[in-house]
Image (cartoon, rainbow, N blue to C red; front, top):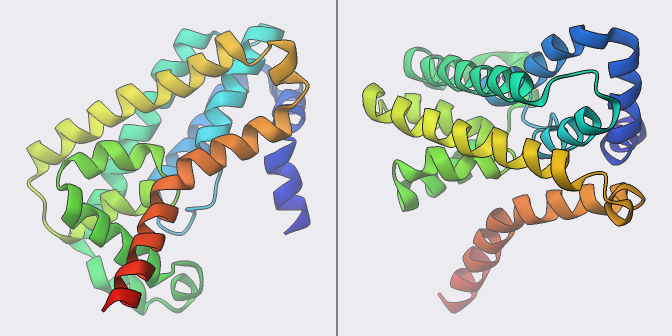
Length: 214
């Protein structure tokens, strides 16, 4: 767990080392991470928002990757991951929770929270979930499980990817190397995580307050 936290907080260093070692192959590595984070219900804790920000920042500083090619590839990876997740939910659904090793990794409470989020916001959830860790991973699965109309789903899916990837990648590209941000990268990452988790925290607080009232 310590190594996992260290990777998150020092993502700029670890990702920078990765870029210098693997050069252009880093495109593939980053695409695989985004695909797994959005497409596999067993990997909801992989970095998403912070990874996009760090990738944009390092692309600007070391020049190894091209920011526009990176954005296009990551958008495609996010859309592909969401579609895999959707069809797993559509065709396998509840059966996923009968697989022993997956039951230990996938928390049903994550799916329940995503269902509640989905019921409240409808199709917009697919777009909104792009910016909410964990919910981002389970929203496509929940959409498939609920048999959401695919043409409607894919329109929200593409729209969300077109907002999420460029927004965070370009934020890192244009602002990540400002000294005050670069020198306080750990705090910036914690800030990104906090802001992205805020909708979940607000929903939890609202649920507790409603229980107390009842």
